[in-house]
Length: 143
Image 1 (cartoon, rainbow, N blue to C red):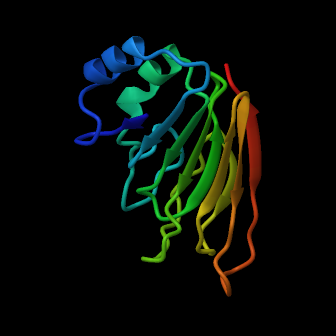
Image 2 (cartoon, helix red, strand yellow):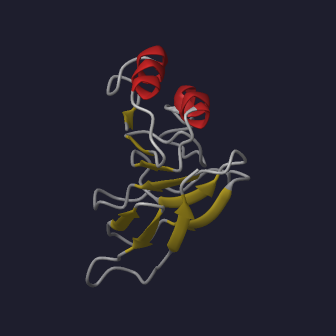
């Protein structure tokens, strides 16, 4: 599900759409992070207003960009959030570390591979050829 300011509508419209389309597994995609660490360039999680709505509908995995670093967070509500802004424009450093942070990198470039199944998901950071070495693997089930 796509969320974020100016992308997926208001919190109320996202809530109504998710209520009309319940699912066992919920993947949300947002330009800006719902949770995670700040950077000087983006000091707040600009999609944070959507967090409770996603939790209420049983979100399992949230994927975001916006911050020019990689960070995997485990929310206290049980979902995983991965921010991957390692696309090649340049890196940001986080200015502090979110208490939910599980993995972080601001030196490599590359995408994440996401594999979805009927009962869960896996992700792997895949560094570009010649990029600084970094790997991260995560997995989870559906709520």
